[in-house]
Image 1: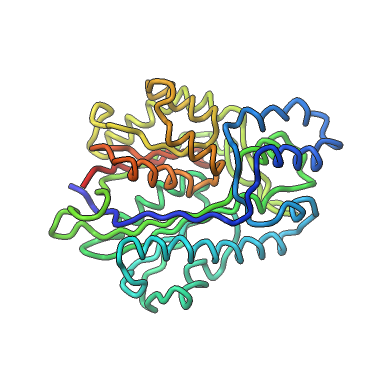
Image 2 (image 1 turned 90 degrees about the vertical axis):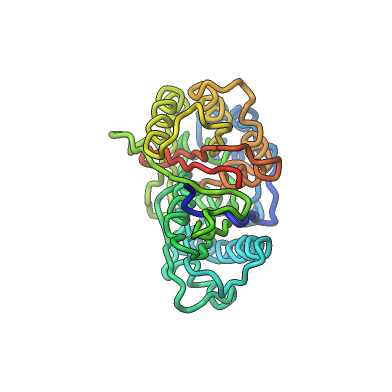
Length: 351
């Protein structure tokens, strides 16, 4: 039985568009004269499967030095704006008013907000003063799936839950950080937000909405903390992005998915489509290999990556939005990988 129904899903991106060719030229200006290995890594921009990204600041901003305070100020300003845009779109699609929302789940890892983002925009949005607030930090790319699973668990009875995830990865581009991981991240990461509106299944069994949400589970592999995440450093966040990610995914994802499905009462044979976080072109290929999918099966994932890059947590919800628009299969497994190293899965089905 479903635990909640998905009423709507919406996305938002900043107005500034960064074509991949300009991202490569920017990286060469930033790193090329000081990083001897830049020319060796430069082909990553051509092979990333990305045509363009959306970023929160005009290009000249990224060519100047910035400290924590300025970076976080940019994060807060843009995160609030994208939250409002995505949330209002999701509410409008579902025909729900902001004051009807009972629980507010906010997922973000690329900046610090205290009070949290949903509190900062509460007056603009018109949320009730007694709405339950659940800000979640530190999930990284897994945050879209884990956040949606958390929102579904909180949608008890007929409660209405609004999930918003917003990530501004571009605010962490660093001039002083000449690591291979930082150059690769410059080739992959973009900015964006996604919002989902849920209602508890209640007595009707979750029959309305655009999808039914079932059980979710997470797998945390031991001794993998160094594979993915952020270093907290003086000028800003420093990306941890290990080259071992694609081979690790290929070797371990099938087993992780089996455990997730066992925990949620399912099996691989019952899944009509995997809807995955497109962490990068090599990660998508590794997922297809590990899950025994025909090459090219994760087509919506590749298209989202091509148009938006890797936006961290919201990205998988961009993919889900496309899958639903194309006609939701009977049963899907929403899947994302994130810091930990973690696999997060959530079962969804056609209403």
